[in-house]
Length: 248
Image (cartoon, rainbow, N blue to C red; front, side, top):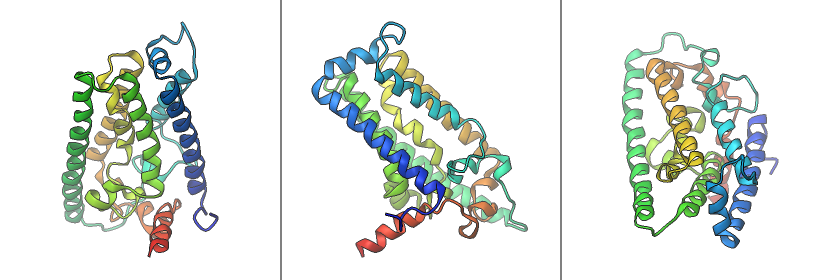
């Protein structure tokens, strides 16, 4: 294990992954044993009856709001912080033409991911409309996405490998789309908790896209030194590389 985790960011991801595993296990146990209660708590106002599920909602909201606030915390990945002015170190003499090509290529791939994601979750939405799945099922799906987000970061990401083709999470074009993806199922549930999660995640995504459109140079290793391997402080790619070596 110590051969996999060497930087503060790597250890931070490991701790967060373990926390997410525990949260997933707790909600899944409740889903299997007391599904009706899970639904009841999800629609009950927090001021009438406070439950651990409400605490989970608070954690989700704080997690998203934190992504809207610049921070220099060491445990925050450069994948997220690269959008901020203070984290940009210009590569002298970089090619504007190459940057333009990079942006064009990444935009096509990013919106391909978005289309696939909306189709997948649109199917879940239809199942919900026709009564095949219910509120608790969609909540469980979101908690699964919550766990899968860190599995993608640390171990394997299908979007990275099959569509985006970015070399690591630090260089990921859609890194801050994670919250939107987590809470897409919440759109279909007409509830304060669900809609507050979904629409806050939309704010995070829109904020990311606005910065990306205004300052694309911050998101390309050819124009931002901190995204280059020699300057990387995260080294999260080493985990995937080592796992790949083990498989071989």
